[in-house]
Image 1 (cartoon, rainbow, N blue to C red):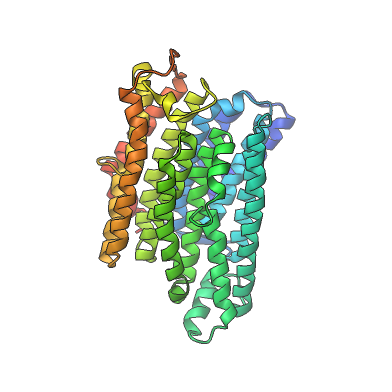
Image 2 (tube, helix red, strand yellow):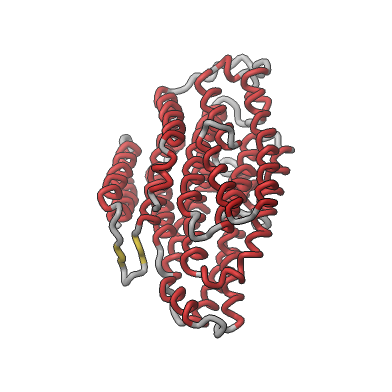
Length: 459
């Protein structure tokens, strides 16, 4: 809970910084504040506490996901330094990002449906603004408008589902709802099950799973690249944590209502985005479809064992987030030389800047699930859990879609190492970006070495 207070304080401080005209060292202060939040989280780790009339629950699950969110946010601020430096509204955008993190933390730790809604809205409203923050781009404005319309529509499904569940159980607290379900088995009204399915639809939109993914590629492509990186990592972590908390902790006893629907969604999410990504020439759009595709593997782990998959999902998200933020760091750097980032623009990158090419290769190979990178161990854990639960055919399908992913990831790798340079520009990196790439590479290898410890955080 102390970490949440620190982040809220940082958000308020950035707003005050506009009044006192403190902008020069603001990002450094924000990063130090986020590191302080990580320290408080470490000191509180292992304890269980409830706050605000038991509406927020901080346990190992919420603290682990909160720690991951804060760490990726630190990397994001490090990566997106020029997003603030070159813009006049540094304080406004910093505050929006920090309050998005506040919403994300609430989504990992809610114990009450009203707090789930509050967390989603705090996160979403800030993102609607950030998606359209590139004011001179009509595509960015279109992305924000699409995100706002689709997000509002999905929130309507979620709220209707919450209302129906409340009408059947008489409570917003997920622990009380779970107790009510277990003690009234076979006596629940029909509209309760409708409410569960409506909540499923609303949350599936938030995690951008098929068939509710159609907004993601357009919004990811139209938003500024740094904001796309934030949405594909921090926002996805929070959405999946909220999804897990609802269906594993609250609706476990009515699994028969939603498990078949979720299985179909998982299968579609494995197939559709991976196949579609093959036909993309824009690297940014390719990574957007890749982000959707990885949700399919996470859902495969979830439907295999909603109770035992927390550690597996956490490791998978950690590996995915580190790889994704690395890939977007390289993409963001290349965009500073060229506004378009097609696969051809990566031609000969290794000759121009070996560090960028190596970092991008490690990120893409981790996303593809190639050993010895952490993405491989994440997929291995998911497949092992699914095989243990008898989902053999789904594992075969997941392996096939992984091979499809290898194809479109390796298009970029081949272009970087074996194609002739597309232009004569030398992609020089600022020292801070070079340091970030080195740190991210080191984190990737550390996750491979200490995979059991990462998984053990939730045990």
